Image (cartoon, rainbow over all chains, first blue to last red; front, side, top):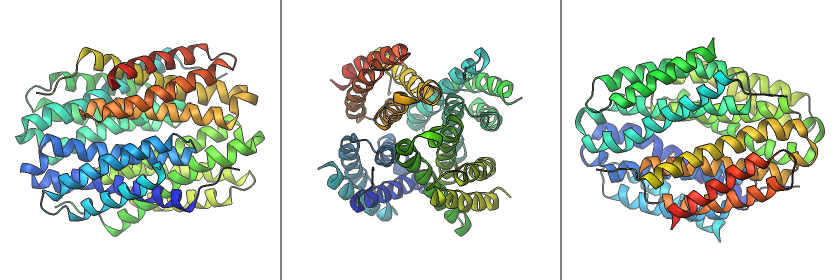
Length: 110
Length: 110
Length: 110
Length: 110
C-alpha cells in the first residue's frame, strides 16, 4: 500500500504553509503597501511561488513519483521568492517560510 | 453514461477563457499600469474571478451536480469583476469576457 | 489593513486539512481498495470536496468577502462527502476531517 | 510591456485542452469503465497530468520565465499519460490530446 513518509508529510506541510504565506501576503500586505511591493517582478514571483507550492503538495498527495521534479522546481522558486521578499519591508516571515519550504523540497527532490 | 451537454461544454469554455483573461490581465496589464489598476479591491476581485472560473470548470469536468452552486457564484463574481474592469483603461476585453462567462454560468446554475 | 481573524485562520486550516485528506485518501486508499471505493459517485464527491476546500481556503487568503459563499458550498459538500465515507471501510478519519471542515465553514458562511 | 507570443498562446490552449481531457475522461469514462481503467497507476497519472497542465498554463499566464521548467515537466508527464491511455479502450482522443500538449510544451521548454 502507498504510504506517505514522515519527510514527505513534512514537505507537504511546508508547501501548504508557503502557499498560504505567498498568496495571503501578496493579496494583503503587498497590495496595501503599494510601491515596490507591487512591482510586476515581485508580485509574479509571489504568485508563481504560491502556485508551485500548491502543485507540489498536490503531486505528493496524488502519490506520483513526478513530485521529485515539481519539488525541485519549487525549491528554486522559493529561494528566489525569499530573496525578493528580503528586499522589501515587513516580509521577513514570508521569506523565512519560503526558505523552510525550499529546504524541505530539496530533500524530496534528491 | 455521463455526458456533457452542449450548454455545459460552452460554459466550461467560457469559464476557462475568463480564467485566462482575469489572471493574464491582472499579472500583465494591471501590474504594468499600476495606480488604480493595482488597488487592492480590483486585484482581489480579478484573482477571485480567475479562481472561481477555474473551479466551476473543474466541477463541470468532474461531473458533480454541485457545479450549479459554483456556477451561480461564478456568475456573480464575473458580473462584479466586469464592473470593476469598466472603470479602468484598457480592460474592455476582460470586461466582455467576464460578462459572457457570467451569462453562460447563469444558464448552468438555473 | 486587512487582517485574518482567528476563526478564519482556523477555517483555512480545516479546509487545507480536508483538501489533503480527500485528495490523498482518494488517490491511495480508495484506488487501492477498488470495488465500492471507486464507484463514480464516491470518487467524484471526494474530488469535488478536495477542490472546493482548496478554493475556499484560496478565497479567504485573497481576502474577498465572497468566501462566505464558497464556505457555504464547502460545508454542504463536506457533509455529503462525510456520509459517503461513512459507508466505506477505513475512511473514518476522512469522514471526521470532512465534518470538522463543514463545521468551520458553516461559521464563516454565517 | 509583457506580451504573449503566438507559440505561447498555442501552448496555453493545448495545456487547458489536455487538462480538460485528462480530468474529464478520468472522472467519467475511466470511473464508469472500472477494471484496468481505475488501476491506481493510471488514475494517478491522469490526475497528475491534469494538474501539471493547469499549472503550466497558469505559469504562462502569470508571465514568469519558470514556465520553461513546468512545461518541460508537463511534456514528460503528457507523454507518459498518452502511453497509459494507449493501453486502454476508448482513450484514443485523450492520448492524442496528451501528445499534442507534450509537443507544444517541448517547444516552450526549449
